[in-house]
Image (tube, rainbow over all chains, first blue to last red):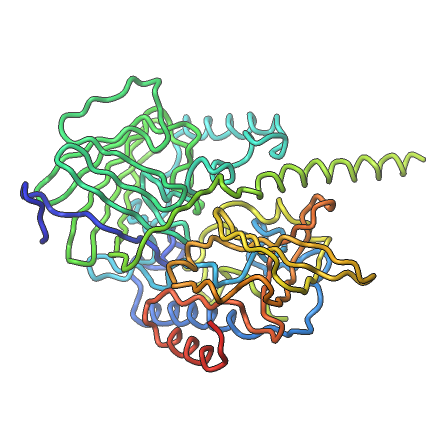
Length: 329
Length: 149
């Protein structure tokens, strides 16, 4: 166990939590995968990548009008059939997560079915309330109605944390810098930075709810324990999964980081919120040493996408108005 | 037809593999018009190797002979940088072919790079993530034999 001069475990350096293992376990799949399942999944991923790198027809024409749906409802909903971009831009993680030597089928390990805990009646009421509120607005009316990642406000998925989870696309990388007074965790995506104050908690007032919440830490033996409250009400937790949710004023996340070898840390998280959940949610994710650098992610620098999305909506509205006028004539 | 989708189901248990939306930073379905497919071909005139997504500018020749510079959106450059992208892999003047869909605002000469290749159909990059997996080594070796990055 590498240690700092003060004797605490040295967690510093660059780490990655990229993995093929999803946040939520698919129905009917066991928590621990067999070696045959792991081989089939990882081979399938390699085969897919290899096939995507095959040469294209240089005489190919434009893709079909109406887009090209794949049958994958999530993919089709996101791309609208436009196909996104080439696989060589993607670095989603080519391996199943191995945690304590076990190949895992989901990052959530409790509730035991690997899925998000049920909402309480109050939790369901808040979801319905948010849906009704959002229905008042067109999601393309203004930048504020667009997702935080599209606005370059935060990393997408749940990269920044808490909990810190992979986004299943790219840049699932973190830098940890450690001092006796504070531990900094920087996420490559949008450079979300968490500064975890060590020592006695000095909680923020209830009404102050910053992005990434308010975190403090302590050592429990060789494990760094991070407790976070006051998470911003617009920050989605456990994004990139059907377990995603908005935190309440009572959401508390406990994270535990333990270095288990030169190249791996065990990352555990517990989400505790009796206001909106009937039970806790717990997860386990391996963080592997990144043999490489983190690069600048200057998201605002060239965020043409937000402009394109909003201009596209205005343009589409104009086309529809013109069509309606022609119909009336 | 061969697809260039990002995270497609690859086995019977593929749902284990793919759990999220696929365009990362933002939804391409909101940005590009699936009823406006395009095929572009011509020399690169400018590279914006920037986040959140790369933009490649190329000079496309229209049917009437007029020339028009189009901007083509790709993914984050960080992945390519981490994989050791060489600047000489893709320089202004390089001829490429792009297929994709135009931005929903049709006054903009912008499109997504659903598939970006050199004129012989080879991909402009490969995606070695440096894991040392045999398939990566084989692909890269075969590619280098053809003089590609």
